[in-house]
Length: 209
Image (cartoon, rainbow, N blue to C red; front, side, top):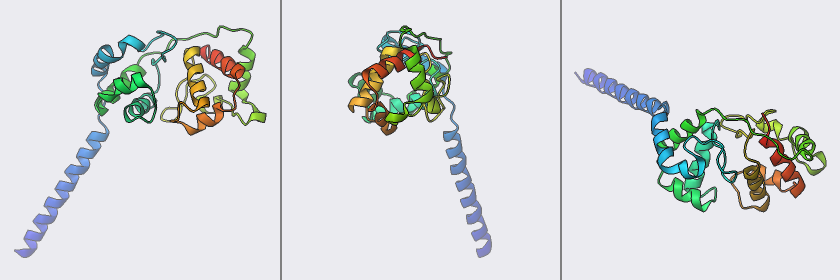
């Protein structure tokens, strides 16, 4: 009888642990709700980013087609104060992890539209930096991390191709000045770029596809 009780207890423990493991897997595998993400975007994000994250004002980033992992990381860091921006901190403060997952997936599901460079006099310099870096300044090629077409790498590097030049310039400047501190590598790279190089690179990226 004692042995039977031990076996029953062991079986109960196995079932309990199995349930916990299954619950963890289910939680981990939870799929984002695109409809909920769209509703949240319409309620919270539309004023600056438009409801689908498309090509709105140049001071705000285009979110269409951005990697969901990157968007989720940025929203979380705004919420936690790791990335500083008074407006975004307020917007992200009320977002739950589920909201962040849904919003990120919704914007990522939209096809990014092509942009264009505007300054033909600096395109060559921008392309040179993006594809080859600046060896004497220890600036690596942007393409090494963000890809030859600016598509980026999910979970690691954001999509850049087609991004507003004004926004890209603002972020490179923020990294260079130490105002944006949530990526040490980018801060180090941007610190070695001149105003002219930042302008050329930002404009070139706007037309990258």
